[in-house]
Length: 218
Image (cartoon, rainbow, N blue to C red; front, side, top):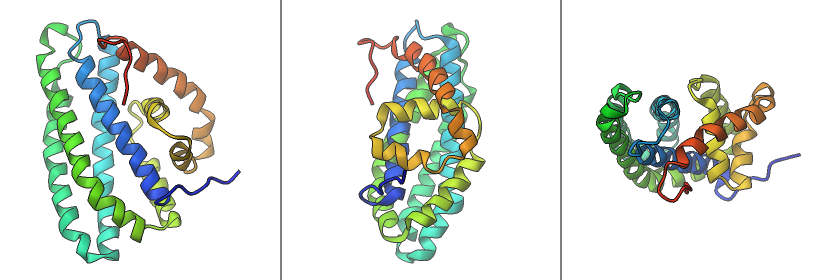
């Protein structure tokens, strides 16, 4: 069955979904890290996933996507350069998050501070990025070109916590957005999605249950 192209094209649909996932994941880590009852194994799992996924995401933009968009429209260069500079600031925050102790609840202040810093940087960065990126993608990125880029990104994605991608996508998606992402997954990956979904559900439920209302919303 063919996937209906969402408004704005596949590039905008998939990028919007990734951004919603990054907002949700960074928010969850920042909140759960502040709860004494948060399981340390699940905290470490989410932290390691975020560090790897965010680095890979913005490196793919800096190294591949930004040059493609700049070549198509040199007028986008200045705005994209500003976004790349924000990626540098995020790298430093991710270094601090990666180094923060997780296993010892008595030493969790550093984790809380680092997780909050990453959340705030990511949310602010996406607010700056979307008004620049979405119009550029709509104008200059065909669905075919985006599919090629997406397959390249998926093939090079780090395996760290990959199941959490599925878990977060299913929490924040609309059917059209999720279909745009899964359309580019290889068949081998699609076959393990059900198992990944269950693994992610266990981790996310254990962290979301530590929040004051017991329910996490994106």
